[in-house]
Image: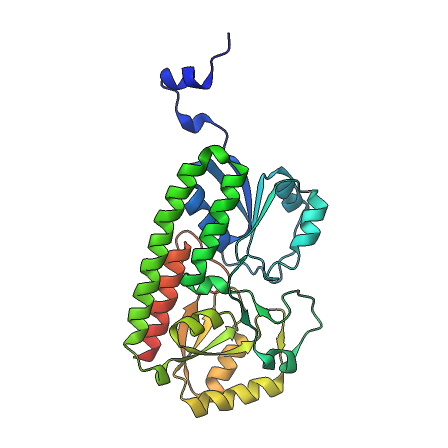
Length: 300
């Protein structure tokens, strides 16, 4: 005679014996947020791993299998994953798709990107900056969307998802408050940085930091010689003290500009990917604290 779930629980069988909800996330930052909210009820696989670039990712046959087996697919949206629609179709995905950024107030990509960068490569975010996770206030919407998507796919876990989402939202709010306090100690006129590509616009908007970048919002955009020369002059004129490399982009051009503008390299920032487990940005919360701390050091 088959034992019911209730009987198994009475016999001391753990609830964790239940199958976890298979979830595929587009890249490491979204995967981390989903794990925080889903907890032990979900099994999350990230298509684009730590220190990898979601802008230029090319799905493999193994990735098609991962998506086809998933019950939930979580993406950033805003055109970051230009390859996602092809992957979704190839996998014949029938589960729930969660667009984590749905409903946020977006930031437009700088106009000069379209004037100064080569767009021969294909990417789909157009004029919208997709890097909204660099603003913790906007991440509150990410949390709501991911939580709602998991509840839709797994209604039995509603209370658990809501509890974990509320706890995570509180941590993100505390992070935001801390970052505001950190930046408030530096006069707004001195809050200027240069990065490899324009991934930190939302951070700049939220904390009144002027962010200059060699590349546009996509790492596929190629910086022109004219654009780099103009940027070098601007760095000198505005008194930018430090330039920053990123964990998933080529630093050669940045090093060249640093030498020509005579400014120091302030370290490495984590833009579109987490670090590995042993690195300083193994979670979204760690990524933000590390980035803010690294930027703050360059102002002193």
